[in-house]
Every structure is written in C-alpha cells, then in structure tokens.
Amino acid sequence: MSESRLPKTKKSSNRLKAKKVVEYFHPREHAILAEYLELENKLPKGARKIDPFEIIPFEDDYDEAENGIICRPNRGGRSDYVALSNAVARIALAPIRSSLPVWGSYQDGQVFHTRQKENESELPIRGYRSDPVLVVSINWADSGPGFSWPVKYYISWIPHYERYVVTASYDSPEVEGYLDIAIGDLPEGTEIEGGLKNVITGHWGRDAMYLQGWADCINAGIVKDPWAWREEISWGYDEDGNELCFLDDAETEEELDDLEIDEEEEENE
Image (cartoon, rainbow, N blue to C red; front, side, top):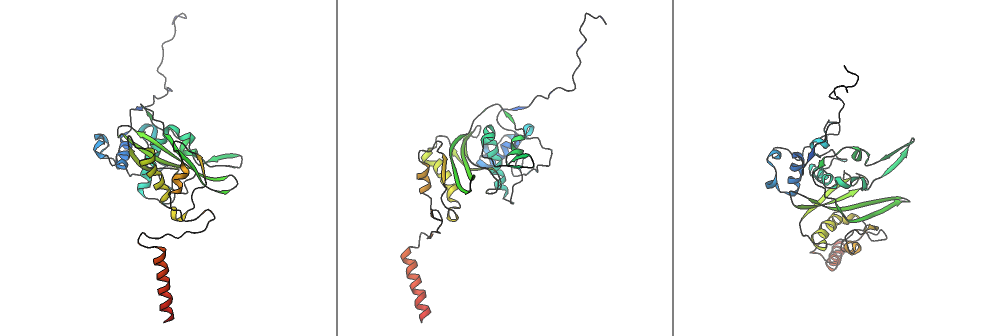
C-alpha cells in the first residue's frame, strides 16, 4: 500500500448507539396515562393490549430510556393504583427530577440520598419539552433541628391527552410509598383558585383529621395566599397539639350534650 494514501476506514464496533427519540410517549406510557386520565379513547392502537397496572421489578432488565417509564414496586404494599399514579408523576416530572425534594445521609465515607437510584437512571428522550410549574411548596412539620418534611406540588401539561396533571413530591417514600405521586388532573383553562385549589386542598384534607395544619410555606409558587387555603381545612389538631372534635353534618354540639344528659339519666334510674 502506498505510504501517501490513507488507510481505508473500518466500521467501529465501539460506536455509541444513537438514542431513540419518541415524539410524545412510548406505548406503555400511553397505556398508563390513558388509564389514569380515563381517556382510553385517545389510546394509540399499539398500546391497547398493554396492562397499565403491570409492576416491573427493579431487578428486571428493563430500559426505561428505550421503552418508556413504567410502574415500579412501592414501599409498604400500596395498591396498584398508587403505583400507576407514581408512574404518571414520574412521566410528568421527568424534566425537573433533579430539583425535587431529597433526603440525604452520610455514612462510612459515602453520601446516600433518597433519589439516588431514580436520578441515576436514564429516561426517554422526547420530541417535546413541557416543564412542570411549581404550584406551592410546604413543610408539614419539623421533627427535629434540620429535620423537615417538605412537599412540592407541581402542575404539568400532558400533550396528546391535553390535560394537566397535578403531582406531590416528597423527600422520602414513607408517606405515600413513593417519592412522587399524581394527585389529580385538570382541563386546559382551569383557574388557580378553582380546580387547582380543589385538588391541592383535597390532598391536604384527605388525612386532615389525624394531622395538624402544615407548619410553613417554603415557596408560594403560583398561589396568591397558601395560608388562606390552609385555613379552609378542618384539621384534627390545633396549633398546640390538642385534638379537635369532629362532628357529622347531622350532629351539633347541642345534640351531643343532650345525648350525654340522657345517658346520665339512664345510669341514675
């Protein structure tokens, strides 16, 4: 071979594999979103036979970047629907997952945090980008110096289905079994003080009878007065930790007093 000629190129066996770009969602993601949003009529043909509730263990060799976000096992044996809501939240929050609440610890010279496995995994590359908007960020309580319980609420636009998804993100899976869950969906044009408020306060009110009102507002986000929303909830305990009395709509304090008097009279007879 002439020394003045360049050698022929050889096909490299070490080339990087081109990453797959999906316009909106992979078939399994479509199955999950359509089920959660109750919009099966918008389900693409290729996704109609996929079980949206199928939970795939972490140990399985499943590539979410290549095949789409899936339902993963949870902590505490929650229902399949909670697994579905987590998958929806992960799809919606993917563009900002590195900024979500996280709890970290340091042990034996190593740093560990609750989103380590989540943030190190690769996710699908999409042909669109729709960044979630922070609705409000709160701290439920402080269980010790530097030990807070933050929750961030986001609203995300889901193309193709043309709905907003509202999510709640924690720094630990202890509360919901997952770090992130979807807590509701809304149509385009929803008012902040209307439908969005109802979803957020509905999430607060779900277990309110067992709780004190949240302690602090970390970031008001797009909510004009988060404290006003807080005041509309019937919490189970006051600011001093005293249990409050919950009455049914059909019962009044006067009726309860009458009941106690009747019981005393029966005991004296």
